[in-house]
Image (cartoon, rainbow, N blue to C red; front, side, top):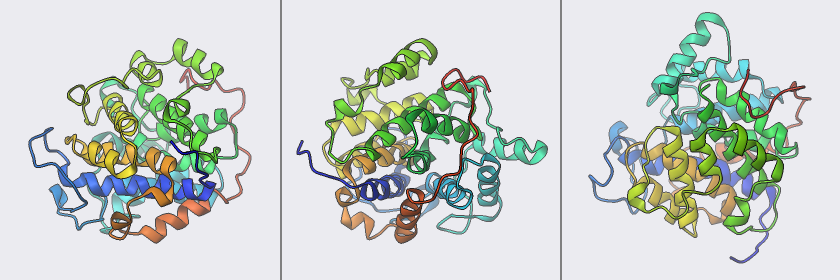
Length: 329
């Protein structure tokens, strides 16, 4: 691939807009069993929530709540984050329809738990709560922490993700995605995808010894040679992460990968949103389909938030003497 230069702001805007585009694209096929439908070729809306083309669901709404929290607090204030998620749940904050819809059970249960006891680390650690609802919104962490160390960024992803999803595989998936986006935000050239997926020794060593087998295999690239038949776009975080990375690896432009992700069906909007945050950072704003951007709800607002995230002064973080990857909170 041509080693073209892509600026930080182009990558940042690409990440958030890419997430929203994937969400808006995939909502058409949400909840539809894989290949039980005519495959998408464009962003057409509809789906179970009867959205207009370019409108999006909970993935983007929660991402915007997280972005707003970083912008207004200048730090990883998990109390503020959960309070904003609650306002979305109750009042439709940051929803393009002014109403909360498509909220997952794991997120809902975490928010109710937070309201009951005030503990912002409300995400269930049960193996049966390993959904993709934290991974789908995680991009703002990498943007806010783009100038911090990768260790700080991944630790922030842990805390932010665990507000609603405390299961270790969910946390690890958020950390891995944050690593990739952080790496892109600090790269002016366009790295080959295999180079992007290369892990530094300290991280490779820790992942190999500390992380779950499923996420470890994804981090090591075991998905790359799988067939489409083997890929599942479900709400299970392991399958969702694998599907998004597989779609990214198998294609050479944003649109092709987004369609590949959405056309997996099942949790189509979230698979495509997870793909979109990474692919958007990789291809940059100029690599996003103009005809989709023209339809996208709140396009200018999302762009503005991306620009603010990478320019907002970050207050000193509170993580000291903290084990980054063992998940002992």
